[in-house]
Image (cartoon, rainbow over all chains, first blue to last red; front, side):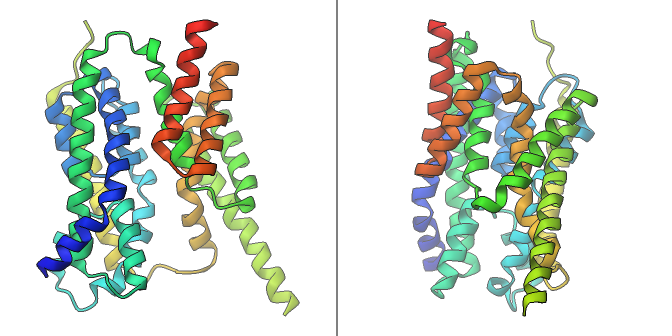
Length: 232
Length: 103
């Protein structure tokens, strides 16, 4: 049991390095938005989801829009439904209590490492959890270090820190690029988002573009499936 | 001086965000048998993270002028080639910082 925890922790060290690196960017931006380090730490421990936390910090303007932020976090984290569902074989015959305690520290990174190990028959819930602790430590270390740096920078525009949000999300988005089949849904998402941003106030353009683009993907995939079925 | 956020609201927004995130994590595991693992729903859920992140930045890129667009393009290209998110981000920020310095 403990051995699995340790091997999960060690297997996640390479991804933890990149988690700490982009966590430091979040820390810098959070400091610019006047978040206290204690608030950032509380967010790290309770929400523990990288892209969602970037969105939260981006929307962190007083007075805080509680509903808009919660909705944005809900939609950006919808993928955790599938991530959770995909972990079912690893949690077979585990108690409900075990599931409730182990699922909190599931992030994209340790999930991916665990699924890779699962294909080799090495994954257990403690392997997953060990990876979660590793990623969480790196995330807290990186963000808090960034927060110290960010508080010391008085002219963020000179370092283009205001552009860091766009840069980090561009990189995160294109790390999910799956090939040509993304072209039309992504173009649609961009068009929906830009038009919605012109027409509506607030951050609703994120939902409209994201959901609209994904629906285009679902509709066009359905047609292909039907074509394959007709050919057979 | 910048207006500070009310402390209760800060705690509230973090707790709400944490609750929905945890609900999705545990909900996915508990409802695993009932979620379709193929078909349009699956394609929709698979496509969602990418389209969502892109929607987040598309208006910002459109409004950031030539150098912003060029930097975003280089960031995307760098991610596609190397898969390194952090380095790609530095490329984008670096291009914008340099352009502000010289132009």
